[in-house]
Length: 485
Image (cartoon, rainbow, N blue to C red; front, side, top):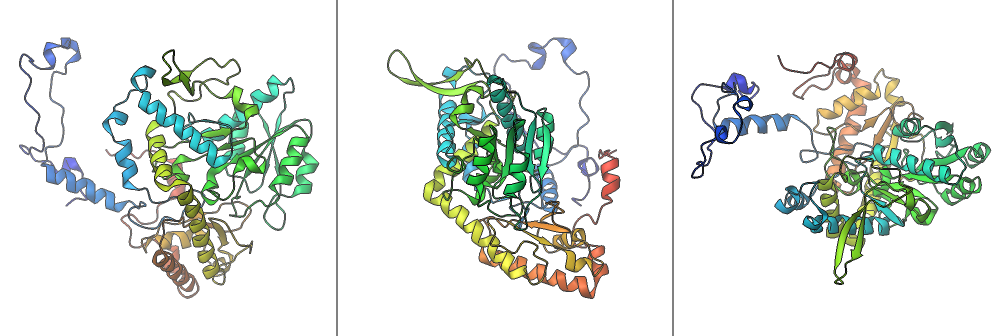
């Protein structure tokens, strides 16, 4: 029944709403709006009872896979469980109803929260100043590159090249191009890390900066990062850290202490604000003092008024700013959720989060390394990359393995990334998963490996138990018409 559309379930006369009575003296919209603004006929809406509407949307929600329903080991995306208390905090009327055009005097509480969020992110990262304005991770990357460009322009040394390793996140080269730079890519060494000699060979007077993800997209810690920083700084470049994998570093090591000049955060990954389906996200950016003058405006600052009282202000007086990069000051609800998460866990809790994520990833990797290929056999951080090459010899692709996982209530990991691993499966369990959950994942992955050998056609036609079977992805990419007619 609830597979039908609301229009199909509709029957005349059903009522599922009640409106409060009009206040005394109010005669309806016609009394305050001009006639040409009022519609002349009633909208054609489905007529349903409240239980029918609720059941319809609950039925739809169970068809989607989400973190509240099952394991979501999506490598690099850090799909961790989101504590519901964070939602309660973001939904407080004083926060939810605050308008971004409100004068600073009327939203001191919101500004105070954002100011303290900046301080906490600075302490976590070892940076000197934070902006919460970027809307998500790639937006944070782009903003960082604009800061790097402004820095070199201010110094009278405009530069044109950004170096990235071949293990970089896919958005890095796109951000480089958008910021007006050229991309110089260098290969990884046999250990899956930055090749120091290759880096030194391309660093020159045209190098604006080096973009490094640490841990990298193979889940490996760049253990020579201090040498990397020295090489980049010696040629006058700046070192940027893609913070997508920061969930592995909390309380263990700080980017600012390793030599990074700028780092972006993904509040919607590391600090458990829900993401997926296009947002909302939070791409806060931390910088060392040399980049602080170029931060986007406004900057949230704390001042003392004439009476000696602290107040929070939006500072627009920034002569060297790159300007605004977001319509309003970031995604405020994501900031509230991230703030609640950090305050709940504290320093010790954040450290425990990273340690648990690292243990979980290594536990999975060591239990699966004999079943799937492990191209870089080193202890990993919070994620690791397997290869489906063994199963490919049976005619089964990594995509088939991923589709089959869906039949067992587990979301597929990231596949075919990073590009330097053939038939890649990038797996990140996060700290949210229990030992029992990890063991279930191991059991299913081993079962699928056996199926690949004994019944490959089963995998090629998977999934079998989901609301929708395997889609024609090429057609979906070419035909974006998804509306119901």
